[in-house]
Length: 255
Image 1 (cartoon, rainbow, N blue to C red):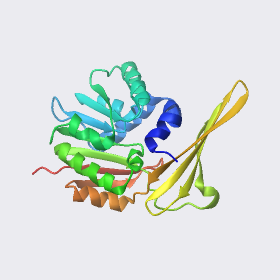
Image 2 (cartoon, rainbow, N blue to C red):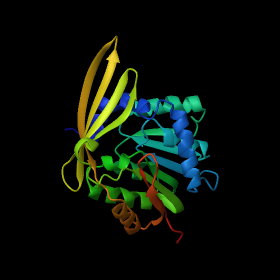
Image 3 (cartoon, rainbow, N blue to C red):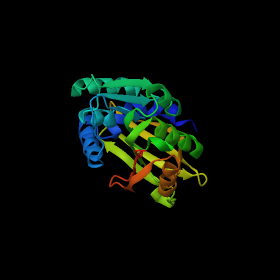
C-alpha cells in the first residue's frame, strides 16, 4: 500500500490522459458544458477560479474557456502539471492558466485571499484521495473561506459506500490494443476502500504488468452535503452523473 500521491507518481500519472480517453480537449469541452449548466461563470472582469487536483487539466481548460481571468491549477504531480501546461498552450489559453505543485490541504491560503475566488472545483474523484474525513472537513472550511459571496464550489466524486461483492469488485477502467487498466476494490472499513490497480502494457509483442495499491475514502453523498452546509455553503445540487460520479454544487451565500 502507498499514498494516493505516490501511487500517481509511480504508476498512473503518465497514463492519466489515456485513462480519460486520450483526447483531453474533448473532456474539457464536456466539463465546460457541465460547469456552465450549473451556472459557473465569471460575472466581472478579473474573476478567478481554482482547480484543486487538476491532473492534466480538463477542468482547468474548461474554466479558462468559460472566461475566468486566472485559473490556478493545483496538483501534487509535477508530471501532470507539466502536461497541463502543454495542453493549455495547444488550446491557446496559456494566459489565464497558472500551475501550483502543492498538497490540496495546504494550497488554498497561498493561492487565494479570503473571499476572493469566484469558483473552486475539485473534480474527477480527487476528494476521495484525502487521508481522512477530517481532512475533507478542513478542505471545505478552506473553500468557504476562499470563496467570495456568490462563489461556486463544484465537486465530483465516487460514492464508494455501497460495498460491491464477488466479481463486481473488478472494474475495467480502459482497454486499448496495447494497454489495459483494471482495478480491484477491497473494502477495509466504513471509511476506507483499497484500490488495487493492474496496468497491462504491450511493447514489441510482449505484455508487462505493473501493479499498485492505494486507499480511497468512502464518502456518503448525504454526509458531504451536510459538511458543506456546516462550512456555511448552500447546497444547490447533489446528484449522480451518468459516468458514475456524484456531483455536489454549492454556493457561498451573499451576506
